[in-house]
Amino acid sequence: MTSVLASVRPDSWNFPLFVHVLGAMILVGGLLTGASILTFARGDVRFLRLGYWTLLAVALPGYIVMRLGAQWIYSKEHLDDAPSDPTWIGIGFIVADLGALLVLIALIVGGIGLRRLGSGGGQGLLKAAMVIAWLVLAAALVAVWAMAGKPD
Amino acid sequence: MSFDQWILALHVLSAFAYVAGMIVFWVLIVAVRKTDTADGTIRMAPVVKVGTIGTGAGAAGTIVFGLWLTFSYGGYDIWNFWIIAALVLWAIAGGLGGQTGKEYQRGMDKARELEAAGQTGPNAELLEINRTQRGLMLHTVASIALLLILIDMIWKPGA
Image (cartoon, rainbow over all chains, first blue to last red; front, side, top):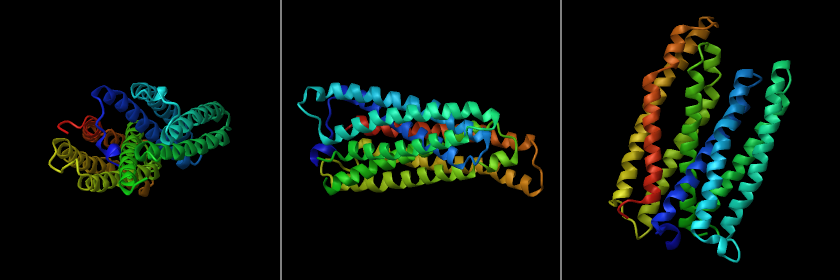
């Protein structure tokens, strides 16, 4: 417990950790906002666009910053030299890699849906993007729990 | 996981909820600046609730679990500079957040008034209320306070 809470890190670890956590917070915020707006859009084209653009302009950059920060702190802590990753790191990697794939699928599917909105279609595709965004958000929260609690 | 590890995880999850709620409001603030109809403004109400729940639960969780950790863990004391700084910033962010909510509620109230009067078209007064500079400034300062809390939590000055 002491090692978890004391967190007496070398100062050089702080900035990469800050980048990682800030990116993760923006990712979670972008997913929550985009998914919520798409959920409550109820066919309103302006809202559907806003929800999609939130995923693209907030969640995606957040993911990139989070992932860059993750790799930076991972290498700073020399965890890449360890024979195997602790459980909490493993959870983080699975969620990040799978999450990246799902976010990209959501953005592609949603982007096609957005293009079809003009011709009266596309809402089903944006609904699919919304469902994926909620799934990635749930997985991201599990990752936050693992990163913070560091289960054995 | 020990009990304190669970509390730490809940503390961090609360911080994420708080920031996520603030991001919800940022997107709505940007969107509402181009909204001049009652329907367009009122349509944002359910998403406002999501933001309110995020910031409310996040603010409550960070303080409750944070204080628990302060007293539970022997190495930290409530009078440590970084903990006092976090408490002050938390209070500032919460106070400003409440003011921001009141400021943007004026737009929602006006929209409901227009809807009740059957005015569904664009309304210049509603647009002006939705573009509140005071609300934007309050939310910006509250967001900066939260950013400073994150910096404080990571660098722990004086620890």
